[in-house]
Image (cartoon, rainbow, N blue to C red):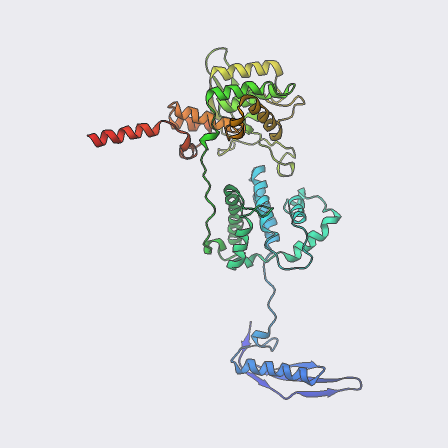
Length: 455
């Protein structure tokens, strides 16, 4: 903006033609003449008074418009809105992300974007805002379907109301964002892990904005805010002992006509080999060494995580992915006890394998959905557990079989390095996650302290 303090005023002039009368205010800024016409003398005098007061207060005048800086209309914000930048953020991360990561990114933005809007009339329902974001706006162009007619007004409103990205430099706006990720869509306090994941999404979005020079700095760095603490450790109350695990696996086989029997081997892999559900779903015959006697070996190389079709590369509910926290083509070898060898040999003999060698599938050859195997698991718990155990968190989820396996290995004295290798963890993460499940350490430590005291 080019400004000057060289301002002079002329008297108000009255101009009349055959039909109208007008009053003209004339003044100069940096010796350049400016003028403005009004229909009444009162309006002209008020305008002239405003100009004189600004000059008297020592205010600079814009040479282009002739107005004092305080009377200039605010410049429209430059740069994208949050909605526009969120779209580019999703696209930038899409190719290198797993389906569940894509879903997590969008889920976090579903909380943020509807909260960071201007007060534009006729705000749509939050459910409709989330629907248009989730199903259309926050997808790559080649995956977007045509927006339904009833959602077009919702999209138009959102495009008008979305705040400029640069507004996040205002601490009040940044705090609004943090407040939004701290509650559920129903307005209740969100779980600690959920808040932390959404905060990571916000952080990554802002870091990308800084990288692309849309923001000068990450606004979160200027806000004193701490996410709720998440334990990050396995609850020992969820861990079953070998007898309880055997009872559960036996109960699984009795569920349904064939579903429980088809899932028995998958659950057994999660307990005896500490496989994640998606790793068990991707297990193939060529990954299994199953001798008639002694220990066998599983070579885990692929996983089949489940996600909504809109997030997967294949357009199916189960993608083929590499192993979690490992390089794309890395594998993991897991020695398995003979009891699991027998279970897998029997499963293959009874149900065969899919065309690609997969062991575990429905009667129609599809991978089991998480809702299907979780339903079988809950029925098995009701058969194997007492009412008190059913009401407890003991083996509440199929994933708890994996926790039980790793806990058993650690308490059996298997070195942490070996347990970590079999479970697909780093040693640091292993000991952090399972610290509460390692038994017998307290007595050993007490004895060492007593020996030191008595010595």
